[in-house]
Length: 128
Image 1 (cartoon, rainbow, N blue to C red):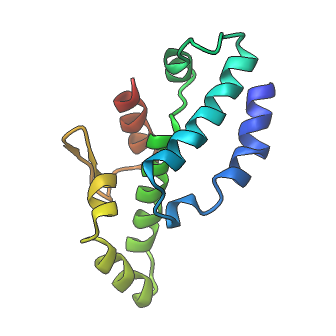
Image 2 (image 1 turned 180 degrees about the horizontal axis):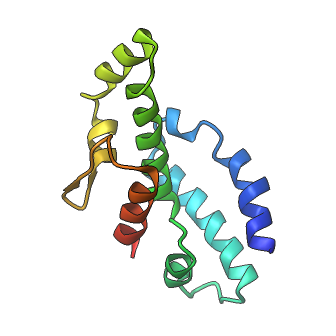
């Protein structure tokens, strides 16, 4: 119940428009440490214990994959937009390094036609 409350109330504020930013690896690491500390507190893990398996079995992603996942969903919405300006922006963004890293997950190329649930499963399985 507490975890769901945090995920519904706090994380959306923390991750608001994160897909529009180009965060550095150390910034993502800092966010990941913060999110991991929530899991440690709720599930009584020690500071030195990994919460990776706990997150996996709960169907949650780490911040790194969540960041890439949200970027990919953002691009997917741009490509599927009826607005020609947004479509042109999507075509421009298609050639940026952020797009390439978002669509290449462990040498798996995902398309923008993939459903949101399938994308989420790919990212979660990549995380494990």
